[in-house]
Length: 196
Image 1 (cartoon, rainbow, N blue to C red):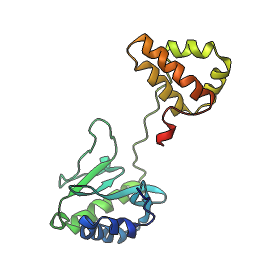
Image 2: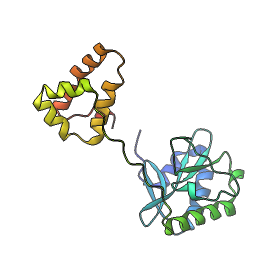
Image 3: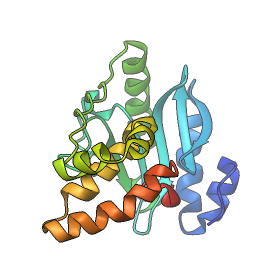
Image 4: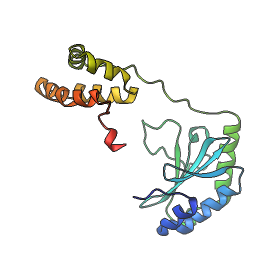
């Protein structure tokens, strides 16, 4: 899949929702927000802070407010797309051009901008401390090079290796997985680096 380089190309690549995306884009560009591409989709920022995103999906077009949890949502249009997981982000879905109520959308965008100016923001949760399974600790204690290389890995890479061993139910699976990851650790390669 080719990376989108501009909002124009994003809109043109989504023919099914082109009219809706064009309408939403026009509303967003009426504001003081700055238009850019992030995560392969249009994003609108204020002083470098993400305020609103826009995307065409299979069954709807959506805009999302990065700090939408602070919006009053008097019209009851916002949804949490990942209940229990997403803390701040709220999404507004449109299944046709008739669903796009320009004045109402303008009000929500204006409120989101005012919230950003007021500094309303959900801070990311503090990461949980790294918990290394005893089997991995023992293997690293027996291999000083692997221990040194493991310590040099990024925190996310360490967590992936720890979870990979911890998630194995049987001891023989844990041992087999440790044998698999030690060469990766020694090479400075994360468990899921090839997917990133």
